[in-house]
Length: 173
Length: 178
Length: 145
Image (cartoon, rainbow over all chains, first blue to last red):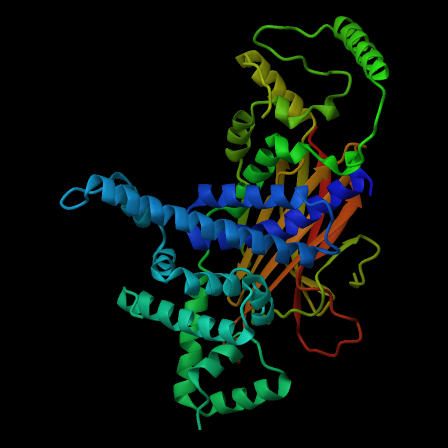
């Protein structure tokens, strides 16, 4: 493949897939800058693939899978850091610095995004893939490596829970 | 008898085939409870599709610019995977030739040093974005308004529908009658 | 990382001017076409942009939102690839819910050439559907100067 052809193909994939994975990243993490970084990482990994994927849709699924893993790792790291700061600073009456940052961040998010952030990660990610990734249950199952039945249940629970949070204000498992 | 809420959720996501879909639609048409459920799901979906999300196009541009500057984006080892064994004297000779060539070019083109960069006026179209401070350019173009929002003010009733596969055509290839 | 020495202010102006000389002007005429024949609404805009920077048009009506992302890419051989991405959100008044369609199309073009983008598709002339409306975006990429 010539470099011209591969550049053209990369641009086509980038144009087609960026909005999808950015939306997914944003609605999982709630942070624009973090989402941009995650998307950059995902596209670098895609660029570095030695064997190109046969079409844009395959590239989309691959990138979503990569993005989901990057977002999941980011979430784990963020929770770990919050817990670590809390332990070190013995949060009691005093707010840990990352706790304050987290509160400020939450304030800036839209109402719906705040509600989404209240969902457990497992439910949030599957609903985000459905509504922002525009993926079928089968595609989501493939990406998350779970059964279609499992996807169906999680989407249903996530949708019900999100609807309740938007109405009542809190997640009730 | 009403289908389970989980089944309604699946229907709402378009996961059923035509006959199953028609069966459920027929039920919803006559069932207030299920119609309300679908309305709730629609409201949740519309809330999620709220357009107050960040400027995706801005982010797309930022990330593309960042990729241009990312050294990992420039390394493409595909064409150099094969290891080629070359005798050492040839490597030394090639290196020497490259040095001489580079020095000659350097002297000929005369790149200015100091606080400025040389602009390759001979071929301005080849001006590479990574030679310009991107945040300066970004600020300049961000000051331009790139999202044009228009409310279509069409008289009378209008019924938009998706009539086929979206198309991008040259004039002349378009089937639309004038 | 790019190795960019500090740039003096005069050079920034010069660079910006150089980029403007090599920038594009995108002219977009959006139309609503009734029954494949008659234009019932139109509007025209133009924006200055550069290779890789998108111009977006968002058209809204009672039951539809269409967002078109138009991006010209200047290739190394000075040809232009035009990318057009369409996102359509259409609410279904009869059944409820929102239909969503997304598409990405690309075409090699010349400067000044006119292309047409149909985010809702183009109906076949044989279609007997009464009173349907589609959206047409006429796009031209012109040199800035």
